Every structure is written in C-alpha cells, then in structure tokens.
Length: 358
Image (cartoon, rainbow, N blue to C red; front, side, top):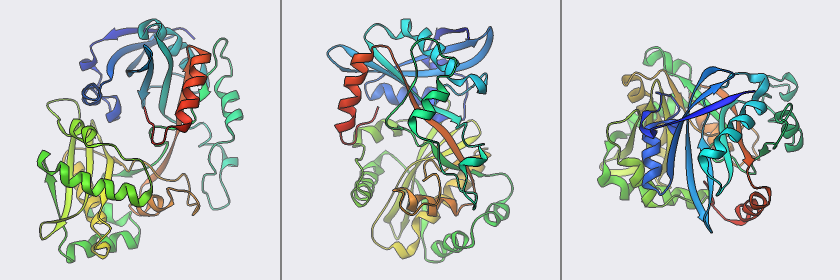
C-alpha cells in the first residue's frame, strides 16, 4: 500500500467528532509539554483524511509519538495492518531519528466485533482473542517492521454510544427503567446541575481525587485539568458541569462537544449522599446540553466490554448501560517500533510505572 503524508499547521485539522483529534486537543497537549504535529494523508493516490500526532521527550534526547484516536479514516478494512505500517514508516522522517516508536490508539471498530464466535449465548461480546493471534491478523501482508499490540490501551477501547436524536421522551424511553427512575428521583430530591468555571477547578479536583482513591486509580494532577478548561475559540468545546444541592457539590464531569458528538471525558462524585442520585442528574443534563448544541450522539467513554462482574469496570458498565446506548468495541492501541531495542526498554519501564500514561 502506498501512503504519503503532508505536514500541515496543527491548527488546521479537518473537523472531526473525535475530540482527541481536534485542534482543541492539540492546544491542550501543548500546554502540557507535548509537541503537536498534523498531517494530511494520501493512501494509494486518494485523500484519506488527516491525523494529529503528539510527540514527547522521554529522556536522553529520545522521543515517543502518540496519536489519540487517530487516524480516524480507514481506507480499506481488510488491510488495516498494511495501511498502519505504511503510514508509520512514512511518518518516520517527519518524527525524526530520536523517535523510538509511534503508538496509535485506534478509533476503528475491532475486526472481532462482527465475529459471531466472539459472543456468548446471551449476546455478550467475549472480547478479542489472545494478543499473539491479534498480532498475526494485524500483520498479515506487512512486509517490514511488524505492528505490536500495546500492553495498555491509553484511551478506552470499549464504550457506549447514546443516540440523542428525538425528543426527551424518546431518550428516556430507550433507557432502563431504573435509570429513568433515578433521573426523576434526583430531581425530586432537589439536585440541580450548573455549568462550572475555572473557579470550580479546586472543587472538581477534590471530588476527582476522592473518586480516584475509592477506585484505586492514579489521578491526573490539577495542571492537566487547568489545561483542559482553558478553552478558547476552536473546533471543540469542553465544559465542566457540577451537580449540587443547596450549593453543596455532589458530582461533576467534563463534557466535550466536537462536530456532532458529545463525550463524557471525566467524572467524579462524592462518597456521601449517594441516595440523591447526583450522577444520574449530571448525565441527563449533559445529554440535554449536547442535544441543544446540535449533537446527535453521546459517547459515555469507557466501560467493561461485557457484563462480567469480575471486570474492574463492571460498575461503570452497569451505570452507563442504563442510558440506552449501543456498544462500540474499538481496536485499541498498537505500536510501530522504529528502534526495536529502545522500544523494548521503554515497555519494561512502562510496565512498572504506576499510573503511567502517554
């Protein structure tokens, strides 16, 4: 497969529903110390969209490249590996000799999502097969350096998309009865939702860190969310929503909108007053705000791939699946090494770095 790239200003990306591929996201990452590069792609002589690539130093003059949910467009679904390997190889001269590898956090639906053998009798997806088989399939037809399945997916591969088309009654009718009930209960108990500002970032950070402790996850620092909230005129918008009662914060979330899609980026809630059902009020407010902004879909951004009670994201699956959306199983993160030895050393460090993320 013949692939060519043309460098372009990072502020001139084509409008996309994937907020992580927008000019807005490039600005956020620049504030956090990344370099942001944008490219037009041509595959077999035909335009194939554009892509945002982030570049970061990792010590001793070395860099790594990362594309969050890029590239969006897949020219030929049967030649995924050929296309991605050719694109990675073509980008090497643009990324420079110090770049160890490029990691693609792919937005494409997993090729196993349409495989009937990957579902149980109840219709629940069993997930992709073992890594060895995934790599064999991905590298079919790749002649030079092979693609490696990344040991971690930076962005969530499994999500739920809610259809926002129709009136409020239509949205509610697609939800599970318990979810509808909890939305109404939160309203009856006096929970309200407002748009927050930069003055609410401290409030957010307190809720977020408390949530991270409860769920035993490594949180982002306040600098990250300040960068996210700075905003400005761009091709996407990110808002902080706060659910409260009597001025007391109960839950909060970051909502992004880009093109015709809204995304639930980050959420947090208090461990107290759970009976007020504030997270339900928050999601309902986010969906209505997204509809008013012209969005037709809402990405709940990260769940377990199925209802397995042993999965660490099972609680999120139960909560988010109640809003009546459909599952999307993305292909996850894949690496293309430029320096095999340095890449292996990087993976070894990544595996022991608690909370590490690109």
